[in-house]
Image (cartoon, rainbow, N blue to C red; front, side, top):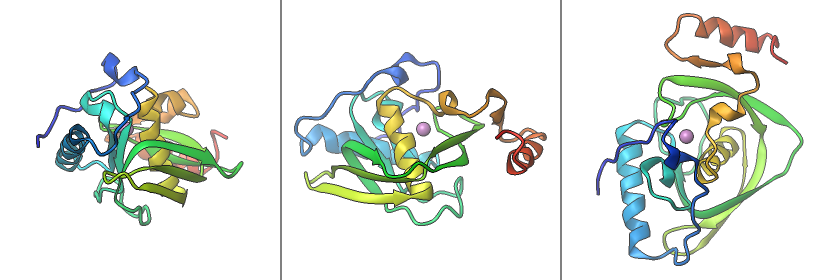
Length: 182
Ligand code: NI
């Protein structure tokens, strides 16, 4: 029950491969999830992974409503423990991703836009869902954190990483829209 400091890019704890949880119903898991919720809500994030608040475990939450990512379709609010996913398409879709661990930056990241994912909830029940669009993206983004990967390492072109409040960002968005970085 605490708002935690979100680790920022450069903190080596973000680059670990997080540990599997053996007993998904253990009390410490519930405590970590509470801290994750308190923290993600306080920062208006759409999701968060346990390593971002220094817990070295495979837990993610996503689908938290936030004005930072409007108009992204309905993503069910979900806690997922020991998550996995499989890609169901060859089709990639791009989007300007952000991350609480990479404040103020956005990067154009292409990811498969159709996946199936599974993992356990806090009661130990298996959740399995197909996801498309932003839903598929946020799950992949959060799962990347569990393997020590931050979105800047996935940007299509190094120039497509930019401060979101920079005047030129709008122009960069238009260039991408016009296909200049294909
Ligand atoms: Ni992130």
